[in-house]
Image (cartoon, rainbow, N blue to C red; front, side, top):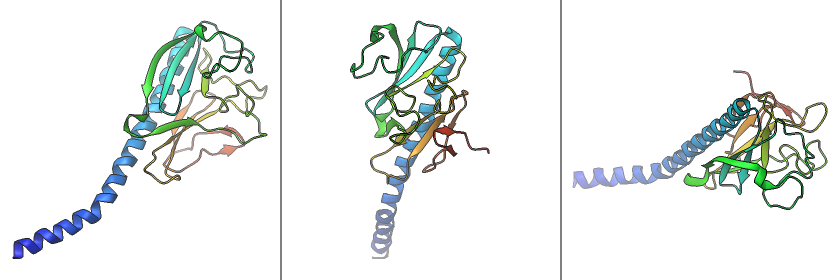
Length: 201
């Protein structure tokens, strides 16, 4: 009888702890996915500097990232006529972009998107960094932005999990100068407008 009572009590404790453990597993998957995105961006930057070519990271749906290289020394083409994933814009043929590697982010339920600037702000035009589904690295390791004062050349990737509350996202900032940082869960990168910076530790 005493053993049955102990087993029943342990069962109640296990039932109470299970939802918390499942949430923790999802949070761990979110952390791993954010680290994977940061590593993929770093690989793209290294590829751009090593090959001395323009390299881009494309968000494919919300499930994977694809690394592609353009056989030119810079990314300066008309952003409104640059090749788009959906093929809606004319300009450089997509065959000029050579796929190098792909990373699946959604294998554990996580999703990745690019943070889109609010309508009417700098960087929200088609092809702008952060407004489209891609981020381009120049051969010098900086992110390509088309505005003269380089205020919209930062890119923010948002990693989410459908089983977690909306505010439990993780953001990965690719600073225009080449710095990449993972922000704490639920925290936006500090900055004004679209000019962000990695938080100081």
